[in-house]
Length: 206
Image (cartoon, rainbow, N blue to C red; front, side, top):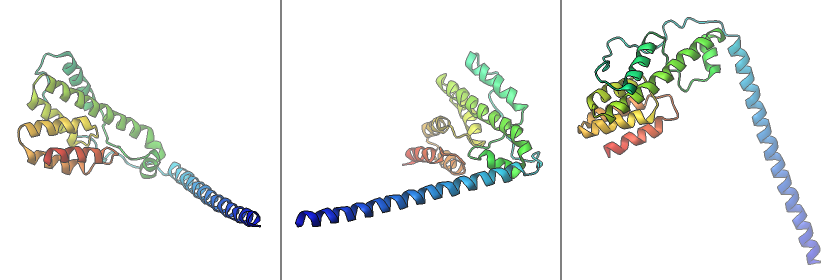
């Protein structure tokens, strides 16, 4: 008798478990379906957005920027300088953290190829500035390294190594005010690297 009672209780709990799992699976599938439908609706809306004027966007501005060009005889430094000078005459735009759908919604699908190119120019620029600054530091040209890396930070680079070396150089000069200023700039980054960079900067202040 006890066996039969246990058996029916077990069947009952099994049925409840299966029902709960089935409901949760249905709910998750429904949520995924709604999210997918919402995504494709936004894509359709984005693809139908009219072309907007992008001439006044926040392009990287090199005017008034002084970088240490043609000061050192080093092959890697010269390569970096040439790359930066090449990009100086291009449109460079920081679109980190903005999806293609959002770009099309804001500026029109017809502008996406141009915006993508401008964003690629930005990625190349901040990578080049990081390499340039790191190499200057390796050769003990620290003030010039600060100049290059500070420019990269000012335009929104999310390369952690750039911020790390810049903070290290400021810390070596005991210039905590500049590290605090870096924190304020890093807090504005629209990137997954924002929190790791902020955490790293905090380590120089604590």
